[in-house]
Length: 298
Length: 297
Image (tube, rainbow over all chains, first blue to last red; front, side, top):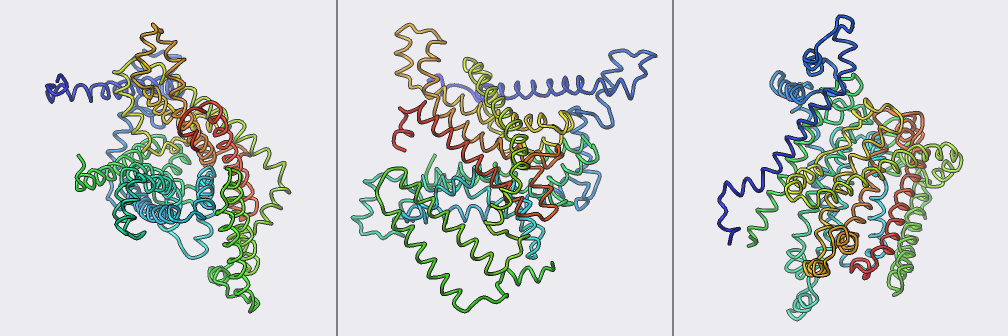
């Protein structure tokens, strides 16, 4: 009963206060780390060691360095904000431009990977041969560092005339299909024996029992896998941008930042990729809620 | 090589004997039937593994035949025999890469990341406030491409293996934390109350009941992390690396179009990943033999 009577405010405090406290601790630790890491560089480059300096001056210097070892949170926020507002959206200096490039290949790869995963899982569930022969290799394919194949795939597809989004989407696909396949094999097998036997007594054929029984039963398995898959696809798309010397995309942005020692740029690209990852999983979670609700779940 | 030449080569424009395609189809039928018959055999796990192995062998055979018959340029796809040859020719080099990447960065980073995740999970197990705060943050990190911190790690820890290990630590920490916390909750209420009625202390309950109950979760994270660690270390080497390492080998040899060696490095990584996974599965079977997921499997 006590649970029910809690007010909205109390529930918010219960759910969100701990998260806010943890995030606050992270920001404070970040400032502390920025201070500690930047201090030697600040003393060497900005402050006059012989004339002496106050701790306050040192602190200010560590927070405003041009190329800090660790940029302070407000510096990253400023760089992030400036990159969004001071340049047109189609400029390579604008992070939105890179987000669009990476997001496109991630989404394309995600759709292809999900389709491949669904197809493979349906085949595996219906064929004992594929189950025995193929499934172990699908599992093994993930113990292979798939990202290592990225440069080769890019070279191969590039020489076949594919460039731009397609090769990156292919890498994203490779990372997406696995969680979908494994979860769907499990999900399609989740109906109880009594349920499959009931379909049998209805004289349902394979397709009917797949469509009416197995697929609905597999939905709760599918969506968590999709969330994992879309996050993995983003990593794939970003890593695929590294070895090609690509000019656009969040991965390329990270790489150029690391070439030129633009620390703040690296951090804001990281923040952006985090936001993109959260947005993509958020979209999948939203679709999940919609589908499950339309099927009558709470 | 021009683009059109590559397309022609893949499309099979170069001549093959007229009996080639019918022969290939016949061989494919033989291969398919042999795998089919093997899969139909009822038997132990070993029969299942043999079926998968047979399938793998057939894939390699067809790869070799097609690449050779169609004259696929080795830049595109080297024949398996070339890859194996390169594996043996460059064995000392690849061994050095293995020691650099797996022996140092992956192993140390994986152990540190998993150890830290486990320790933090046990430490905050008794603090519901911290758990409620940390869990959402930790599971959010699963959507963030943490490999992206590699350039920063290189800046802080230098080109050598510590920077790669740092990336691995960060990537493996959160999955371990989330899984261990979930696992510690896995012990049933009934069992906990039984421990309470025995007047068992907290450490006693932890050791005798809750940690064993958490084992399947912990092993799950260890297995996922083993793959993550390998990927993380290899990708981190793309961002600047010493003169050895599997990621370094792959990126430099790919730039020089020395594809057999690239594939040889990938084989090394793949075998390492699979062996690590198999080792952890074997360990799990010993440690968590009582759990349904192990018993039935």
